[in-house]
Length: 303
Image 1 (cartoon, rainbow, N blue to C red):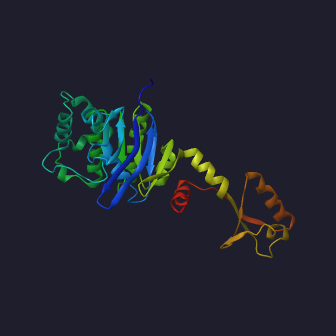
Image 2 (cartoon, rainbow, N blue to C red; image 1 turned 30 degrees about the vertical axis):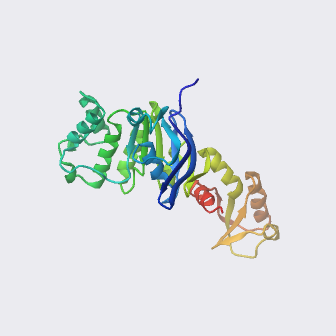
Image 3 (cartoon, helix red, strand yellow; image 1 turned 135 degrees about the horizontal axis):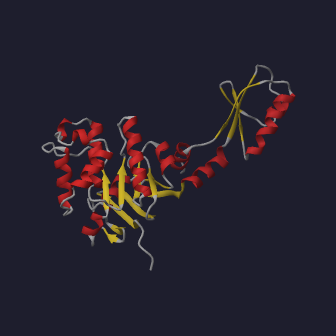
């Protein structure tokens, strides 16, 4: 029998009174993946994370972290997981270093100062190590949350909107660090509303809607399918009547641009040739390709 996946969720259901937050979620994340979990507000992402972290108990189904059931083998499951929460939750009475030492103690770790010092350095917190948590900026507090999630060296790290409201420098530094962790073998699960982050970082993506997984594939496959359906050529020609060969393609108009849907890239040259043969100068052209935001909107607007 092969080793267990990093995360395995089967038939997960969670209700809050009349609200069904998770409606039978099935998900498997392999070890070493950088995995995206996307969805609009209220889709069930944070509820799923809460079940994985043992903060909420499912009404049906099961969830496992590195093979450990989050309900029946909670201690091992929790030790295998590090969660960076969306909210800035902190104790205002401790310094940064004290906060990380206390977090180490929760997991029974002694003599963890060398790793704490490395985390402080890697997250640019060394100068703030002896600063009280309540005196930190929002961005600095978020860095401490990342350090807290990593202080026990978990093999699986869940980042719930980790860059919400933080500056560009922190985002770049954080992703460089998280990328190194992933290359070292850590499994990363990311939820974010910055879809360009998910597109550039995640190898596979699941999209949740109303508590269900409505799309699950590699990022490349999701983008490729959308691009086959939505690729287009945008042309801006010098003023004048529309050449008959182009008019026959029934282009849409977007301001001064003519937009031609493309089934495949080879259709670009005949369109350009038709413009040249009609003696019309091409002032601007662009082959527009959908990005992950287009894929997301397409999936979320399906009936």
